[in-house]
Amino acid sequence: MNSLKRVPTAGWIAGGVLAVALIIVVVVLLAAGGDSSDGGGDVSFTGSAYPNVDTSNTRKVGGPIEAATVSNLDVAWTLPLEAESSFGSYAASPVVVNGVVYSQDLASNVQAIDLESGEVLWEKPYESATLGPNGVTVGDGRVYGATATEAFALDQETGEELWLVPLTRIATEGIDIAPGYHDGLAYFSTVPTNSSATYEAGGVGVLWALDGKTGKKVWEFETVPKNLWGNPKVNSGGGLWYTPAFDEKGGMYFGVGNPAPFPGTPQFPSGSSRPGPNLYTNSLVKMDAKTGKMDWYYQQTPHDLYDWDFQGPPILVEAGGRDIVINTGKVGIAAAFDRETGKLLWKRPIGLHNGHDDDGLLAMRGQASSIRAGNTFPGVLGGVIAPPSTDGSTIFFPVVNQSMNVVSGSEVGGGEAAAGELVALDVKTGRIEWKHKFSAEATPFGATSVVNDLVFATTSDGTLYAFDTEDGNDVWETSLPAGINAGLAISGDTLLAPAGVPTGPGQTPQIVAYRLGG
Image 1 (cartoon, rainbow, N blue to C red):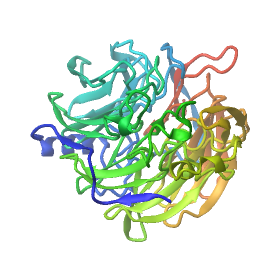
Image 2: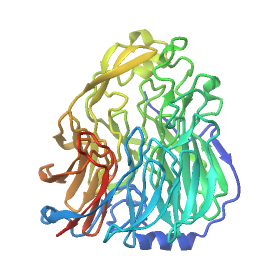
Image 3: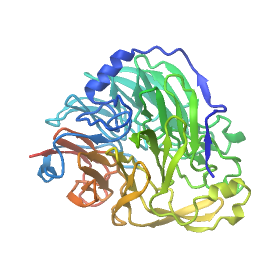
Image 4: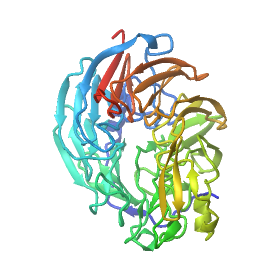
């Protein structure tokens, strides 16, 4: 049903000679709390240069916030969010380095903010609307990010632009990723969609490795072929939405988005304009971070019909003495793999499914007539959209139970909203440990975060929750000034919640800083 390959076909293009200052960047990242030297994801941090806390993407921190103290969190400061986008004002996870918050809104504008006071230290405006998720990464004295079309690096202390590199090829491509940064290279990806064009023909997702100091293009990897399976006048697809993970051996792991059109067009129903599995869409890929050479890939959904990304971000953990990588996505399936071989260790559907998981395979095999029309779970905004987190033994997934109406092989429509949920799985076995159900009006579009014995989650109605990691009991909750579809940032005694989506009258988008004792 699914595809695992260790020998790549086309896709890797060498683009230059790698020249990096390895020792300097490792020291900087470790000092900032932004890298996990063991690659296992079990190191705690009180500040981070990386959007998902460490390069294992664990979203796990330490510090004084825990079940015994969480009730003492109170508002320390707020900062207005004024960007305008179809997905609100904000969809990133801020990063905190040495008492400074680095933040990017959905107009691509970057700010450096004093963590203690909320004072804006510097800002770099771009006014380039993106769909998100976006955000910045800090390393080697630079702040890396992207506009809708370009990658950039800013001076960490002043915000001065150091370089700006265009990456999109055509008007229908965009960039929506908080970049990776590892051993002197910054990693960005194009996607076949932007704020004015959604999966129009010809858009290709390309992963780029740029020299962190100069912005020079070092290598590129085509997540889908530029000929788009023989029909670039109809098809598009691929690209990364979330930050890659990196292990201590130089391995890089990332999830890839979907092919399009989905489910098809009247002339080419059920994806028939793009025959075959449509590699490397809906896949987890491991490659050499320095060279861009692929090691292995696993395609979760060959010939996807429903925008069921396997977009990640992958999480690196150790379980039972084995180094594993866990990934998930809008397909609503979590899976664990041996990092060295790519062997599938376990796979678990999470959230609502109602018998359509293999529709893409049916269409690819010429059996599209067997696909049932009607209400289908997950929908195009269902599954796991935002990053999960882990404490090393359990992984916590925010699951959106939203459906779609499959009308035909060329049309899907809106479905119904069901209760979303927070699902906790054992990292070793994939066994469900507990679930917490949210109401249909409170959808978990934001990332989860682990702090000691708590897992924090948010919902679209603007509620911030803290749950006990052992049993899922609701330990603490509070109301935000607006809805949220972004990630939290936690540093020491302070928690940052970017509430950027007004969903009701009187709601005002803001970053809210909660602090123990206020």
